Length: 105
Length: 349
Image (cartoon, rainbow over all chains, first blue to last red; front, top):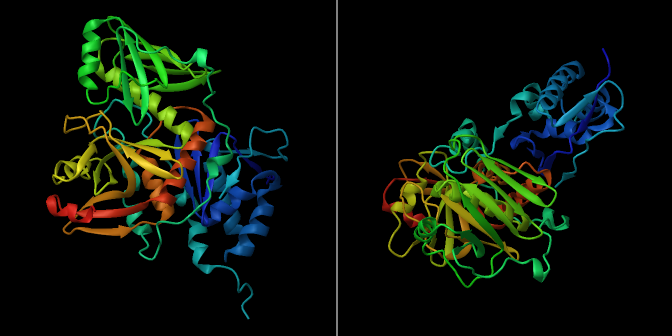
């Protein structure tokens, strides 16, 4: 399976509240609330780190979950976010992107 | 020793259901003119979530740094020559929340409509924050088209079936093209105020509000939760600010709620008064009267559902989100279970 790289959209505002991330899309005024696991993925979405590495080094070291299971859920999650336009996905590192929203707490 | 002693087993199920914890909903962005039901219906999906997220041990008044402080102001300071001209014949200055907007019409009949509709909020001597020339046209498309608010350079463009408007931030003036329908001018005013407020850290919310003991209380909830009912039961010592659109401004590091002329089911404008915000009550009708703390994240989500904002502009969206985060950190946000009678006001003081 191809590697998946992900980067946050710039057209969103994201704020960390405790362990939860609140994300607001400027394009369609949609509000998203990420749980702590999803928040880790969001924060690691820098366009350079592949999803497999995020899952292995961030999710599986923090949460008690099987790697394969975590990766499967993470893949579905990033597809969901990409469908809403708040993440961009690519099969190679993303260097020239419109992305990288700032995470503020 | 367990293999992963530091890992949180409790969150395993969250991971398995990760996508289910992705909770989208929409701002009430579509129809600023609509009354009860339009804004709230959007948030109903998550109505039950808030109860789960209550945490009685949670403090709801935490200090917090202002995220929006570093953002550049969007409102370009105008030089004196650019400021709107003072009162002219045919003009009506409507001051809501301390922000005067001059509406200039050459139609005496429409001027009378404006004076009647915004009576109590007229301030002919105020220096307007912006000025609109109104051009009345015979008819436009129906008002059910979604509103579009976007920026073109320094000009904000406001469009809906029943009106078109443009507002130049630098010159602080613009025009409105509409038929002689007071709901259209209501909408333009609400949108303009939403932009002005967003630039300075405030917001409008689909909520009723009132002043009691010199403090303001906001009552927010889904359609039918009791926003109008609450203020209609207000005791004589309470001043009703609105039964429809609450108006919140940041004044230094505090927040004040102001009355608005935008009437809901009560069909009467609010009082032109203001007070520091004491509490936001998330309404829930029930068999008893009580207040329950709401976790900050849940409070932010609940409030965002009711914030009126229409612009497709990432910088302003960021500001509004920051404003709500800051606001929730500065005031009490409580769930207010209430019986629909006057005893509920024992909680509002």
